[in-house]
Figure 1: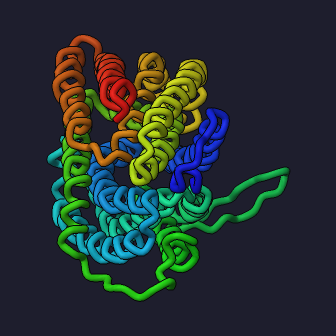
Figure 2: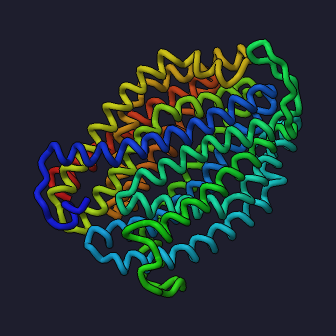
Amino acid sequence: MAMIRNGGEMSLRQQLLLTAQLSVPSILAQLSSILMMYIDSAMVGQLGADDSAAVGLMSTTVWLFAGILSAVAMGFSVQVAHLLGAKRNVRARSVLRQSLVACTVIAVTIAIAGILISPRLPHWLGGHDAIVSQASSYFLVLMIGLPPLQLEFLAGGMLRSSGNMKVPSALNIMMCVLDVIFNFFLIFPTREITASGLTFTMPGVGLGVMGAAIGTVSAEVVIAVLMLYYVTLRSRELRLTKESGSFKPMYPTLVRAWRIAFPMGIQATMMSAAAVVITTIVAPLGSVALAANAFAITAESVCYMPGYGIADAATTLVGQSIGAKRRDLVRRFSAITVGCGMAIMGVMGVLLYRCAPLMMGIMTPVADVVTLGTSVLRIEAWAEPLFGAAIVCYGVMVGAGDTLVPCWMNLTSMWLVRLTLSALMVGAMGLQGVWLAMCLELCFRGAIFLTRLYLKYIKNDG
């Protein structure tokens, strides 16, 4: 990273090595996050199809709120990447101070909005009477946990912008472990467990779906505290003990954050809204289809999380290269990260196709759900390489602060291609039609992102 900032010449081997060093920890963190969702789903899946459907019904809206928070954090962390690349470390720490206050205020506001709509949201999404109460309680708890989640996003983004992937990755893995432990005791009631011929009583609270939400939020709180501790007191580039400064958000910083975050926030809102629309398309198909859809989304996430890990690395590498005015490295890191993302996600697509029955079987014992989920996963597996291209290209563009056009590309692809095809295909093909529409749309999205990457960042050198 110092070679980028100081104008040093980097060989192809050094560029590949740096990409790997930044990507691998982030990939592990992304996989741990999905593993946490996977384990949550598997634990709730043991309770029955209705419990799984309650979680699945709310998942897209939860992603909507989380996506907005992530966009807000990115508006500040991209600024920090550019400033560190330009060796303006004091200014970078000033942006960090301001972001802590601004992000907290925004997160509290969004959390209040989520709490207010929680009683009616399951009805708006078309949930049937058997699941609306559990779905509402699940959503309410997660909304209460949004402020610490926002600070965890912010602190992790700041560390990644400085080139430190290891600490946020390790803490995200810890969050997964904590979530499993909390859920183990909170979801299930006190019960008898037999292991190696020994039977013993395992205590439990028996909160079911609400227990899953409380366990998740508890893990997020712990990790938010640790992440904030490291970035403000331990980070070599960003610790706030180096000099005093104001925490009051300043207009220029907020404007720059707005320019980066607003398109991303609109995208997160509209993409999640599209996912909500798809949920309403799937909901009339019944609890089996709704549960299969939710479990399949979680299973498929295992495949695309490596792409998001590489995208994190691309954002850091391109962001610091632009701050250092290294256009040659912008071009090279763009090509390297996107190529790696497509290759890895191609392999993951093959694994998804072959392991789909196993992945679904782990999450639920309901045979109909396993069969339906397996069939849709095998449809979507074909789209993984081009989906990887779209994910990593977007990471490159975020690192450049180029968010408006890519956001419109994502929205156009989702709303005009996926939703239209889903509405047309669901009647004749059921859930398989919805997932075939997803496969076709992801291939289209990858193609248009590759075209923009080549024309703007590689052919014309940024």
